[in-house]
Length: 469
Ligand code: PMP
Image (tube, rainbow, N blue to C red):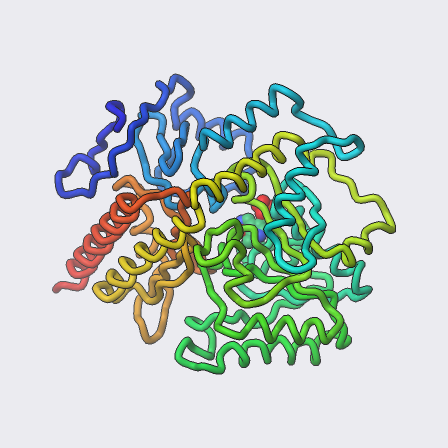
């Protein structure tokens, strides 16, 4: 472990959990202080950005599953830069391939031949089921979903698009339209032709996990919506394979299969947003849609695909791709050699280091521990997810399910003080999101659980004090 790892006041207590040892010394940081950076940011960056934590955290270095702040203090990263660092911060192999490419040729567009884009597309297509084999490369998840929406409309000749409430698909105009989280929707025209149907959420929705017909009933909502609110023909349906920003909502069995059939019967195509769930994160499957037993017509990817490279992709069938041939589709940075080299390296690392298998094993250990915590702490209303895509929803009362948003914020802050970085989501901000780089080990999982245990115990202690006369 780094000898420079600082011990802050809250970390120094002997009863606090200790981070697993890690043989790495971060570089001495000599740049601007966090206060200075905050001042500059406030002066020159968008005022609509938001920061995690009351006292913002400054991250200056990362190595595999760990992050370092400017004092050299180490944190376990349980959020992977918003589910993006799939195989580890500055993974040596991915870095080596990126640097090698940077030193050879940083930029070329698709108007010339370049080997890496061709090799990478072949590797990616080989990992897709069915006819999904034509790749488009872009730079973000928003761009990928924007392109998928265009494809759906061009291919089908239809306009209406079905998406789920509580879904997140990006922040550009068209994908803001697909998104159904009021927090992210600006009051400008962006919903044209997009319908948001009831979310298939067995925890909050009308049909719970104990209802074997829940999947069919939620799918019935889509069917009704198509009948009532569209011309009976739709361009398509899009959903995340497990909702990410919405707090790791997993759909009931049979739901997507029936929705896909109904959407196809209405002339539409089915789009799987794999921006968070792809590349083995769910543990049992390489793609999240496989959990739901379906094969989409269009798959969108970003975030974990490049381990931090600004890379997004859309993969579709040759038939659908034909529809885009009527005009030129071009993206200056899409498929650039450096992103392609990083994408290729990520696929290799996932295979060589058995990343998916690790996500399965570590996810199972984490979920088991979280379920134990749920039995001890009433505030934990729901523990859900697959592999290393996990949500812990906090409620004030298990019957009413009133969101425990303030309590969630306190747990979240306390985890940071104790050396664990996690995410927060759901419309009410009451779901802890745990989605670490998929290279974490058992000792990391045990540290996470110990930190969360302590944070919940302290919260309950303080709640008992408040309630006491
Ligand atoms: N889809 C999903 C499921 C996402 O989580 C996100 C980003 N949070 C996006 C799309 C948009 O990706 P980007 O921020 O790269 O545009």
